[in-house]
Length: 112
Length: 114
Image (cartoon, rainbow over all chains, first blue to last red; front, top):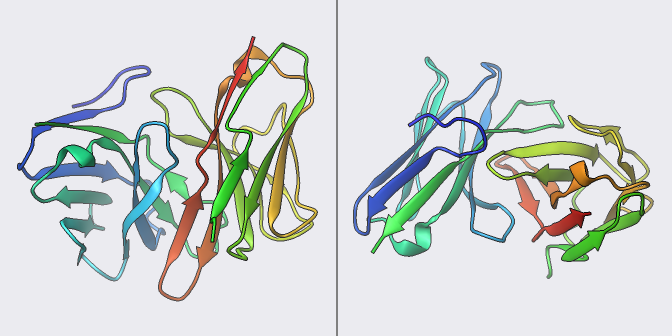
């Protein structure tokens, strides 16, 4: 759900469930989108990316969906594991821009 | 291949003290960035560089200075630290190719200003 103040949106799931993390992006001119995973005490790490000429891209246990009509991006994680517990950020890039734009992030908590 | 490294990992300063955070990369990437991350918030861009000898201001540049004298290093300086600068600082490089446009982040520097 929505968060207020300093609290990130949080998604709690049971191990083995599928997780869906959502992101609304801001710039209709953005043409490249990335999902990052940030584990506690570490820097963000690349998970998967997608270009604006695609609607879906699959990786290992992860799928990114892009809906340009409503400027929405989602990350699906299949068979979620405790090691998936982290904060997930989306980022959007626009061709020609030096500065990617990051979302605030969603905290995923996986219960064994 | 170490990727992106940051020095130091932790630091405690008193108000008014100065310090320099070092970011080093061995990937030959042109672009480098400094971000700060505060609890419950996303990454906020402080300064960035699009090549050796260049720097530019980001979203929250006040109180910080940067230098990129060598392509592989990007330094972030705090001339007179303030408690509001207590944060975790991340350096990142960026690779823009035909098929990808991805940032690579360092492990972070946790700074506390008393």
